[in-house]
Image (cartoon, rainbow, N blue to C red; front, top):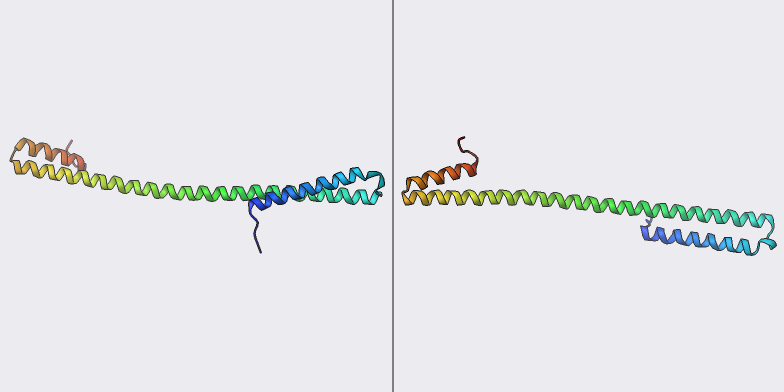
Length: 133
């Protein structure tokens, strides 16, 4: 079974509505020459086409909403990927900061400066979240 897209549904809705309008014009133009049965037949066809046009408009709306839902789903997936990436960036940033803290601590040890060693150790503990309070 083939499917229909929103643009095709809109085009069908317009075509059905146009046909209904044309039937109405013919009915009004030919009113005096039409038999009661022919008039009723034209009215019935006009309403059937208007109803079909309305159903196609509704289908086009549903198909548009389905596409929008797909876009929202895709956007939600993209946001999840971005959030995961940001968490990794934060973890890498913290790792780089810790490495920098370790290097600063090592430099203080090499300098044999007790105050610098103490300050760098305190800063490193703060970075790691293990400082004493």
